Length: 631
Image (spheres, rainbow, N blue to C red):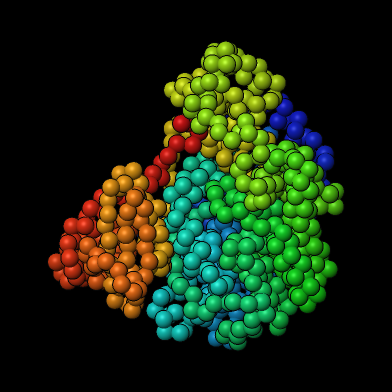
């Protein structure tokens, strides 16, 4: 690997100003993060059945040292807190596994066993966390699972704590907010390839752990790389105030759709005076539009739900915990914590709308907006994961879309063609690079990356441009308070110096793919149709799925695959396939051998089976290794 560079003087000066301006004398977070520690996982390494490491918290041991000049001191502080790992007691009967994945796993002891909240990303890390709990609290069975929301770091490890058999037998109910499965599988399948590739940048997947590489993602250390799983919920939470009793534990739920996830909920334990805020109030400014890509979240409704949480639960709570970071104890403290978090999202929303109604664009608002001192001087409002800059742009996008209203931006050339013209106008490659080096020496790394990007997109093989761009990305990474910005900049530098790393992790696991409904399955297939290639195709296929009374038709026409339930009089299809739901998934997205499945009777066919071969031939394969910092 090409050697990394040291921080330059302008970055040192920036960090010195942060040390002066920020309240580093406030150590309450360290007291809270260390409180209740029972035991660490030692060594802090989790392996899969093949012996491969899927989690290594020991790799972050360097964070115990003094902050180096290659890391923003505020981000170093946050990373130190996030790296603390082990089993912690939150309150009587409530325990957390922290630091063994990006997220926390919470365990609440019931009458006969333990209820697990948010079982991490991977089956392996969840199993390791449960084993650590049982080592110190006894071999209690898992008598319930709660998914707080539909992101994979809150359900992916479920088969590490329970089994499909226990769930099917009623021994372990699985509770989730309404719409959970739809959103969980859609996010990881529809745009899963692109999100996965960008997530490699967001979490610094290929970066070495260390002061010049990955130090964490602000929300947690990083993502585990084990096996993501899914067990469908057995009980939907569909309204605020819904109360359920699981293994003797009374739980009141607050639905919060459209906040940090499209399907999410907070919940309150009245007998324990404990409030779980899922991912709606954590020790960072969260994302309104995550850098890996997602639907834009709604900060207005987010703030409203936080107000509702304050009024419904704060005064009745002694402790607040969440699915990331560390708890907050004391009614007064947790009420203030929720209030400031609410003010943070509400202020960003309202001030962005005020400015855009005066004609400012997203990038202008992001550059000018300032948080109130009472918000900015609190550690948990800092942008370690989300940022004021990209959140403001997300709010603008939510209301106004990609277009800023200037007709000069309505029909610009695409990146490579635009780059060639920019470089020519600026006097050619040599002139651009000479001026860019001067800007680098002046510490204007933002401008360097913008203009050198033109050179790289105009001349992708220009080694000199790639080297300068990598150096500029690296300094921007060193200067970032935001963990995901740091990872993006350093991953960009890494790939420019060492070549593409592809997508090291995958979220579209068999469990997630198999959870697709028939409608979602055909939606996912439709997204892969090579439109121009299929312009002249006209193929109608009926699908009789044995565990449904509905006949579903797909019709490929004019390069579009539509699908619908067969009702009324329709023209006869070209073929009819009768099969089970698992066979449907296997045949279309699971790599099953269609011919063998027909031969052994797993699939029966009426009409011409060759039309399916023709239809599949029009499907394109997504590319998990697409370029990001080069054309």
